[in-house]
Amino acid sequence: MNHLLVAAAVAVGITAALPAAAQFQKPEDAIRYRQSAMFLQNTHAGRIGAMVNGRVPFDAKAMAENAAVLEAVIQLPFAAFIDGTDKGNTRAKPEIWRERDKFNAAAAKAQEEVAKLNVAAKTGNLEQIKPAFGAVGQACKACHDDYQKPL
View 1 (cartoon, rainbow, N blue to C red):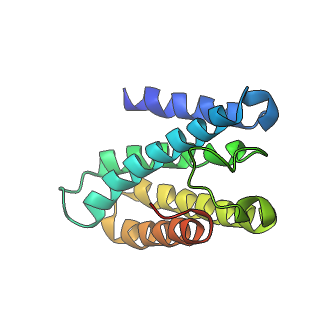
View 2: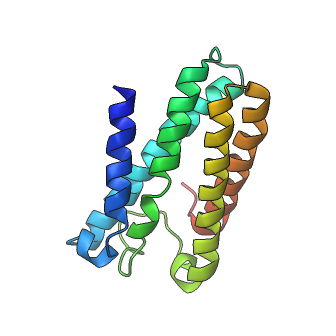
């Protein structure tokens, strides 16, 4: 079942490579899409974090599966930061559109750190996973600090 979930996430990721304007009929569709992708990211990162922080027992198979899904879904939301999606039901700051290159670099950094986490997770070695997960957290926090409005 988890392999099916990873395959579905990868298929959706391939779709994200299509021109963004063709994907969304309305700005609110793009906003919901990126919010959904970030919900998935938070869910799988939370599962990893629970193991890394000892809140749940370490399970190497579950760790690897969650890291693989996270690597797939972290590709998704960035195609949905299109013009016109800075207003409405969103926490996205206007700086995203004013600082597009910096925002894209932050997104790329987060994606790079998640790829490293996925490699570490495949080892099944929690001592390799912990620092990789910490780097993911730092990259995500840096982007959110700069580009996400507080609740």
